[in-house]
Image 1: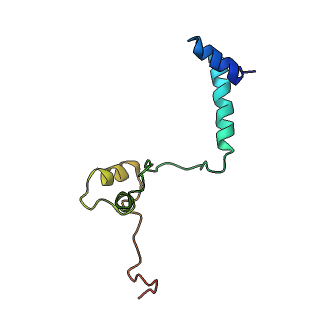
Image 2 (image 1 turned 45 degrees about the vertical axis):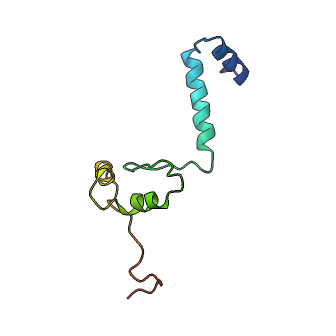
Image 3 (image 1 turned 180 degrees about the vertical axis):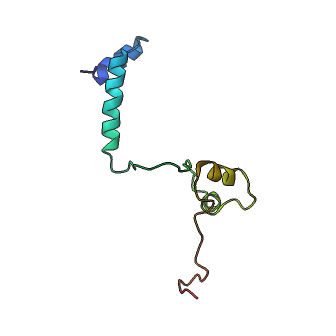
Length: 98
């Protein structure tokens, strides 16, 4: 069995290195716990992951619809095989197709 949290903390406080088998066991347990979380998604590659945009709506628009000038975002999308744009609003904002 791997060491408990108190033993790990004590080892770190003493600048000790954990045994590789203990680290691997702890990592497996962490993966099991995180995989059981409802907010963890199982995704397939290729995909483009974007970090926190801190509420910047303009940045969200750029991420979803492209940066308009063929810049770094467009190249990143191409490099990972993601769509170049995620689509946009309907032509008719009322929702009625023409």
